[in-house]
Picture 1 (cartoon, helix red, strand yellow):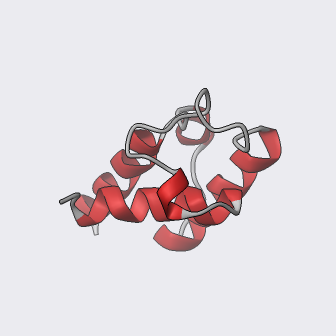
Picture 2 (picture 1 turned 45 degrees about the vertical axis):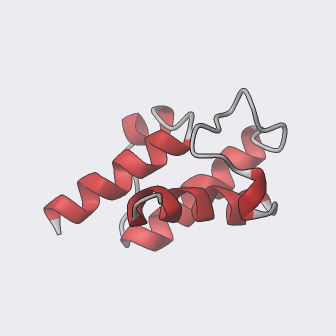
Length: 81
């Protein structure tokens, strides 16, 4: 069973890309999801910012290329909260 951070990351990506949670695997990335284009990336960033309650730094935005990257952001936010 995936942990809460992984599930939260998958849900964020699914919601941002307007697709089902089942369509977003834990190892999904910009290369495996056709909806993850430039607009999809902006939507993912906006979803993350809303979830964590702060704007992402440019290097954080540039570093998001997979569900695992989103999970790492959430894990880091949880650790600093």
